[in-house]
Each structure stands twice: as structure tokens, then as C-alpha cells.
Amino acid sequence: MPALAESRQPAAAGIEVVVTGLGLVLPGCDHRDRFWDQLRDNDSQLRLLPDPAGGGAVAMGWIVDFDAGRYLFDVDERFYSRHSRSVQMYLAALLLSRRDAGLDLSRCDSERVGLFQGTSRDSFAWWQGRAKTEKFTRRDLVAGMPSIGVGLAASILHSQGPSCSFSASCCSGAVAIGHAYREIAAGEVDVAFAGGHDAALCAPLFAMYRHAGLLSESQDPGQAIQPFAGSAGNAFGEGAVVLTLESRRHAEKRGATILASIAGFSYGNAGSHPTHVDRSGDRPARLIRSVLAQGQLSADEVGAVVAHGNGVPQSDRSELAYMNRVFGERASAVPLVTTKPLWGHTLGASSAVNVAAAVMMVHHGIVSSSGVHAFEGGATPISSGMRLPTPVVVCMSLGIGGNNAAVLVRSNAPPHRRANP
Image (cartoon, rainbow, N blue to C red; front, side, top):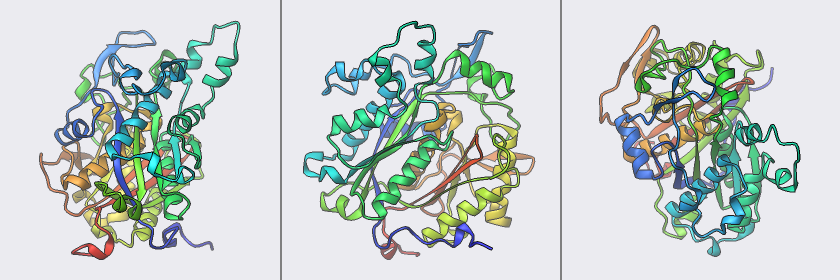
């Protein structure tokens, strides 16, 4: 019988991976401090807007008046204007992350700077808008490529390290962050920009999800997604989130502010139905145990879990099941944080939003007010300003295709400096 995933050890010894910057382009949010305010206070940015597929109004997270030039002010407009809204949001988040990290790439070895980006439906809305075009040009060849975002990013940053795009449904952002973590931990790169992006708020998306019975019909945006509370549908959003990751040595050498550490990543498939999640919670539970083993931590040291939390009953059952498997009698006492009620389900970006939320909770030592204590049959809100019991947060994401991904975020203090190892 093969060894279980949780028996695996870290990919590399002695190279700690830290987070030094966050770039965020989300509904009502384009700054790390604003992101934290909304997360801490459970301040939903969802609004009722006309349904792109017709049929009245629907709750969604739309970025009003997005202007790429506001963020790409030092890039020639001709370089990015031909590309999709999704790609422009990614480039904006990328440059915001670099600025937030205070990183001067001219002082870095360009071959040791990597780009790792995840997306579920990149160019989906762009191609839908081009569907009736009779003549396609070289512009379409370039702009319609799913991986064009990291190609543009490499050109802007003059980075010559690995540049990779990942598509793993809603897990895409977490998978990109996880691979960046592994590359740094293995000593292959010193710096990596990693995250997720999607902007697919167009008629086909809403029509398909409504037909599948997975679209929230709530006319109260603040209640459109209610994970663990009997909700029955998604409310979608758009955006991009990019983390700046570095080896601790690289970050400390340049005097960077360290927000948190990435201490583990595991990704796998449920290996059963291609669209259903693992209701037993077995596969997610094993992935969580794997990242805890990588971080040399026990389940008792986890202060909170950032859940997939899309408000679909099947996902709720899976998440309650893995919580019970991992934490046992303590399961209902471990806060489950949900980010989708705040900015909507941002598809491939959503799991990167979760990791960013974990980074900020660890950095501030406070649990988001969007968290709940979940138990079979219901959930109770956590108190505003609740202290994070321990500076360790697990991020879990699930996705169509049987995808499961877990990322471990912990305090920025290395293990030998922690007061309670």
C-alpha cells in the first residue's frame, strides 16, 4: 500500500518561503489595508446588478470603472490595451504586489525571478465577445492565449525565470502559489509572483450556473452566499490577487517587511466523480494532514481554516466532513473563514483570495468577522475582533474536476524563533 500523502516531508530543507507583498484588484478593493478592513469587518462588496443573461437583477462582485492605466502607469498603453479585462487585472495586481513588497527587481538576478499564475476561465469573456467575428487576426492569436498573462508579465518585469499558468478550476490560484512555494523551497528561484485571476462575468457563465441550479437568486447581496447556513448557490465576482513570495534569506537581506510564511502545499484529485466534491471529506483531510506534516505542526496548533465556502450544500457537507476528520471533537471550535460572501466567487482567483486572507489574519493576529463556528446542521458567527488562537491558518479550496488544494500559512517567525514550537 503506498504511503499516505500526510507522511511526506517538506520539498527542501532550510529554505523558508515568506510573503512580502500583496497585490489586490477586487470589487471595492485595490489595497492591502482596504482588503484587511473589509475582511476584518465582514464588509461585503457584492451588489445587485443586471443579470448578464437576462431575468432581472443578480448579486455579483463587479469592479466598477476598472482602468488598467491607473495601475500600469509606467507601461506603454499599447502593450496591454489589446488584451482582456482578466489579463489587465492580473497585470495590475502583479505591479501592485511588487510595489507593496518594495521590491527593486533591478537588484535581483532575473533568472531567479519566477511567475506563477492560476486561472479557471481566462479569456472566457473575451472569446465570448469575439464569437461573432468573421475575421480573426494575429492580434486574436496573441490576445486569446490562456497563458498570455505571464508572458506579458515577464516582458514588463524583464524576469527570465519560470513563467507558468495553471488551470485547476477554483483551485487555480492556490496551485500557482503552491508551485511558487515549491520552487523557492527547492532553491530554484529567490522571488516569485504568484496568485490567481478571472473576469468572466458574462451571459454564458450566469446561464450555465443557473441551469445547473448553482446560482444564488437572493435579492439581498449581503445574504447571497451563506456557507454552512443552508444557502444553495454562488454569487460571482471578478478580480486578481498576486502574492510576492521570497526566500527568507532574500527578504531579510533587503530589509523587507515579512507578512507571513508559506509552510506547506498539497494538491490532489478526489479520483471519483468529475464534477462532484468529495462528500466524505477524506481527500481534503489527507491533504490538510500533509501540509501540517510539512510544517511540522499538529492539528491542535491550527488557529483557523479558510474554507472554500461557496455556499453550495454539497461543498458544505464536504467541508464539515474534513473538519471533523482533521480536528475531531475540536472541529466546531476552529473558526471557518469564508471570503466569497465579501467579493463573490472569483473562480480561479478565489483560492488566492483565501491565501491572502490567511496571510492578513496571521499578520494581524485576528480572525475575520466573516468566520463561523460550523457544526452539523448550522453555524454561529464568530465575535468581531476575535484573536487568532495560534498563528497558523490552513487554506482549503475545492473545484470542478475533483480538484483539492491545501496551503499552510503561519507566523513570519521561523520555527526556531517561535515561543511555542
